[in-house]
Amino acid sequence: MRVIPGRHAAEDEDQAIAANEKVYVVRREGTTLIVLPAKMVHS
Image (cartoon, rainbow, N blue to C red; front, side, top):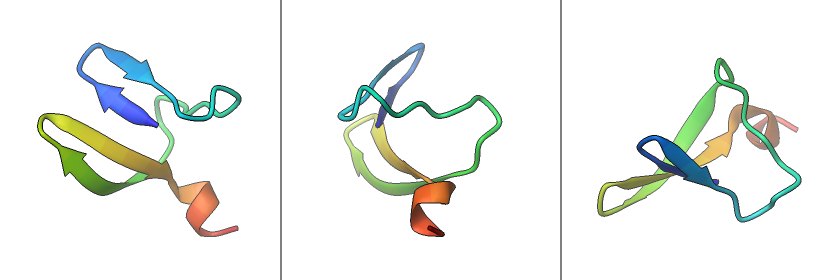
């Protein structure tokens, strides 16, 4: 999922990240952070 200030775009439209869900930043593309939900890492 890409997080863009004030907006988001998901590569997988069926996945959602809750506002209080822990995520890991896997890389940065300019000012865009590419994140992965913690539940995907620990499953």
